Image (cartoon, rainbow, N blue to C red; front, top):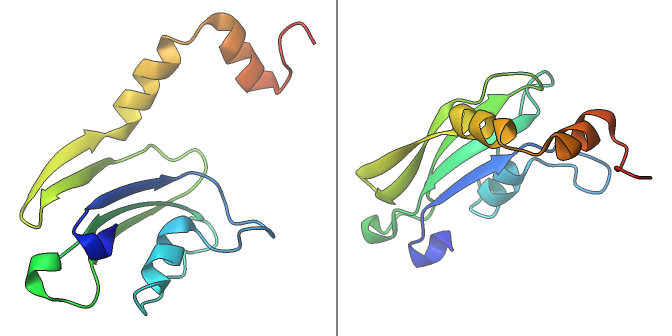
Length: 117
């Protein structure tokens, strides 16, 4: 997508595992010959990528925000062009969605047990 001029915002809230040892933004970044290693205490990642296709650059621009479990989600940019973006209020959006979840669904998420099971 980036090679075709599509800008990306990646919200990767899953830590690395044996099956997937890299955070998703690092895996994308490596496709362009770049590297990124998250700090051990900040293994979750948010990344905004600017495609830069009109600049004939070999790699996109990446704005990375490493976060840890329990951190407040920051406002991240979703780029419309290399110079224009829309701020995405991730924490406020998450909190609004959580507030409107049915109580049974919240209980399932908080306890890890499916309702009626």
